[in-house]
Image (cartoon, rainbow, N blue to C red):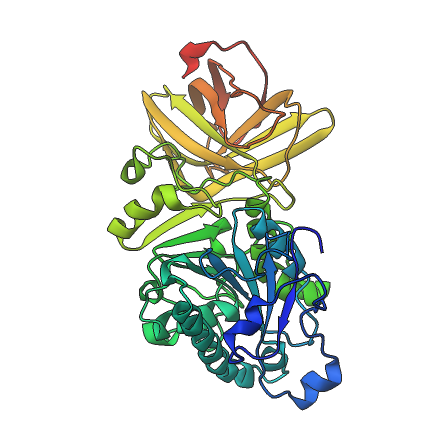
Length: 445
């Protein structure tokens, strides 16, 4: 296989020298693939390891070098018995990050069971096996500081158990949408928590269904609030995708981050548009969903547990956000909801900013975050509507001195510099007004 060689290890308690085999004649193996009959009957738990490394000259170097950093990738519940489709993608992207060992934990014979309760029970068995293997690695000279456990769904709790058994001394645990069923409301020692490793980072995409609601790391990333993901079905009539789409989005986002094709910045005060105010992280910038979080790690450890949020579109590169500033000069106080429309030819995308009623008063600047489900280019004009909810009384005017798109936060070659508009106009409430783009120099900022 390109970028690495796979070594099959039958049982993690085999003599450690089996991980030091040399040569290119070792048979490649893949993660266990079970059929529906086996998952229906049930399987006995069994744990295997698949090794990917960046070593190419196998005839001169051992396949497994305990002095290098080692990442364990741990999949979750597999009700159909099929291997995760993302395994090959994540391993090849991980070996591209740095010189390291990648060990895929194949516990499919414990995870593939229609009885979810049995699978949950098997997480402890799996964690015990992997813990024993890591202890043997340590005996052979490995450092726990260089161990990174990446757990997916139910695998995130397996990673937490391993970390707890090792006294929280492993270097890092990454939990990708930790499983929620049977883990909601349990004591910290029963699920992934910050004490399980020196540093724990968590990504949430489905907290209202298969994912776990709450804060479980030193930093928790909440994609689209950690709930419903753009592009996922909204009704049960969509079949299986309705149930799994939100939960599976963690994989696409993490792979995109590993591949450096997305630049997903997260903010503490996200929906209110306070995107530039990451005071706690100065001199570094706001946290970004990336593999290497080292520049924020020390700050996050001092802050204990930090929640950060970001929005995405339905498709890569997953970002199309604008920070929008509005200065109102109207004499009387108005409350309302803003909807912004972007136009590119016949294509239109809109953002309704309705997470709270906005306050518009004289000489007041309001900063908003407009999130769009579609990326349009080039943006030829914009429309704006301020809805006050006033349907029976007279419509009042709102004097907007300045509307400006301060900065587009999408990392794309299409947008080499911020896009800005400037206006001075009186508009009627509840009525959509379309603006053509006007010149705007640096004074707009």
